[in-house]
Image (tube, one colour):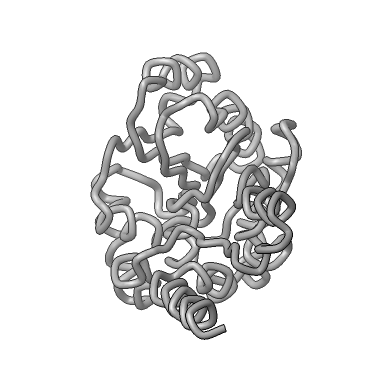
Length: 232
């Protein structure tokens, strides 16, 4: 959206012809499963990883690269885990910082609390998102992270720093928390709040926030704009 604002300022005579085209998500893969299906998925995942039935899962999906700010993520989870020993952090992805991330996890003595799941296909990511309690992004820099949209359309509330478009996707106090900070204590408090209040941060709320980014909805807007430009 910052780019859109720039071009509208740069070319004011054409400003109405510049439109924001967001990243689109595939609703046929990333969607909320039925309660029975979620229970079955959770049972299989917990059994495979030998998790306590009381365990609650925090999900990260993305490239293991510097802008994702893994030091902040690990510090945030360390505090969250001190507050609730039933928490586990799932990291899905690969990248050049994998060895560094392993070192961070060891440094904070979290080897048994963080699961490095590697690269997973879209179907598997959707299944995992359906059994988690919250999605987290501690990025210092972002664009429009598709992983956030996909998780939210699976009904997962999110805690984000507001980098890039994340603060426009997540509606603070409705579908998650937007915490523009590099202080792990504040992020951990937001994670605790979201997990403790499933009555407030409903799956339906996350899905509602993700709805404008479904490919079908984006394309309908594009076609409407094309018709407007063509016939004006």
